[in-house]
Image 1 (cartoon, rainbow, N blue to C red):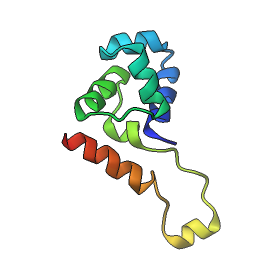
Image 2: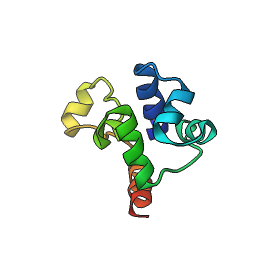
Image 3: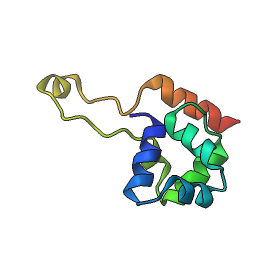
Length: 96
């Protein structure tokens, strides 16, 4: 699950409409929609604002739900929380 999908899931779990979420973040609805769709990168200040608006930690925002473990996963010693490329992209944006 991408960060944008996590944002949408968290927003919906709090029964916030896109308009309400936009108002809480100070962003316009179109920007919020693009962020949720994954078609717009986030700045570090936007990540902070979104975490505050949704009342979540950074880890909660970027963590993908863990899939059910298979026997082979346990032997391999764990699973990946999010694709490395996506994590590097997000961390790179936070440095800006």
